[in-house]
Length: 113
Image (cartoon, rainbow, N blue to C red; front, side):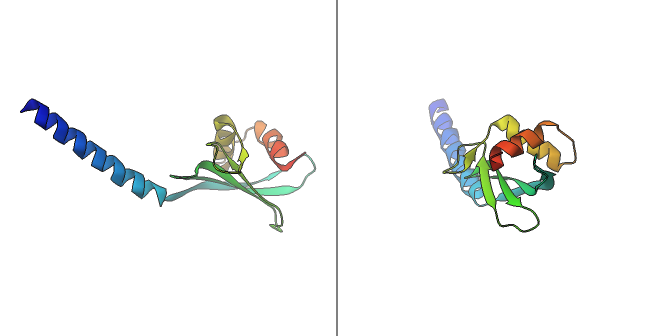
């Protein structure tokens, strides 16, 4: 009896995980955006995002013309530029309005300066 209840509970938990995983893949979280200058005083719009399948990533555009577009992932998504979790967190905090002196150095690295 106890073993049957354990198995039933385990199956319910697995079904719930499948439902949750399916739902989170279709949800996109825009966590904020900011405009930053690189060391050459070019402006870049940085959008901070998180999705179920892409993980934590940045969308970076030259601003205001949007001619150059980059993507950077903290979770090794496809061919995106790779950044660390800490670097992603710097942009997340910057998009929330907190200043971080590391943001420009990370941006320079991403845009090739």
